[in-house]
Amino acid sequence: MAWDEWERLKAEAAKGQSTHTQLNQVAPEAGGGGASPRGDLTVHQKDLAAVGSAAHELFQDFGRYGDDARLSSEKAAGGLRSEGFALGAALDHVAEHWINQVQTLLDACAHISNHLRFTKNQHAADESYIAGALSSISELDKGFDERKGG
Image 1 (tube, one colour):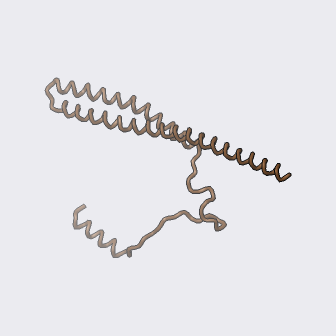
Image 2 (tube, rainbow, N blue to C red):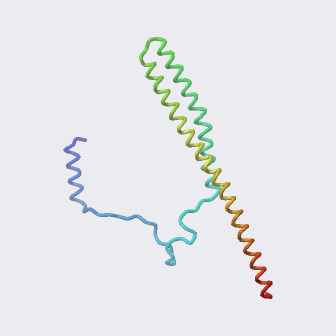
Image 3 (cartoon, helix red, strand yellow):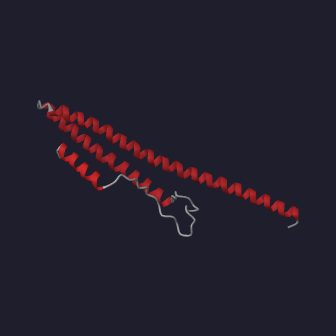
């Protein structure tokens, strides 16, 4: 597209529409309650497990296949270099960057998996703490009820 064509299209678009702002939002729930009493964020263990499983699978598969690509590229680069082709050095350079990118992706997958495992364990610890605190409150209530004669 030429510059003058771009300018013409912008001018036509500006003539056809006035500038306006549109705010996107979720429609309010029936009953006038507005936001859900449970909040906007809901996460289920099944969903977290699926994400963790996908991250682990990607980690394993990409680690294996990424290494295959690296070995093939390094072998081809060595062959080209030994035959005097400058392309061998360029392919070696690409293979080196490939290794860095693979490692970055593998680190990200491991981070996701580790974070989900930590989150699951922390959630279990929080649940245990809350259950203990609530049972303590229940015991206090029983003591007050006994004292009042109820």
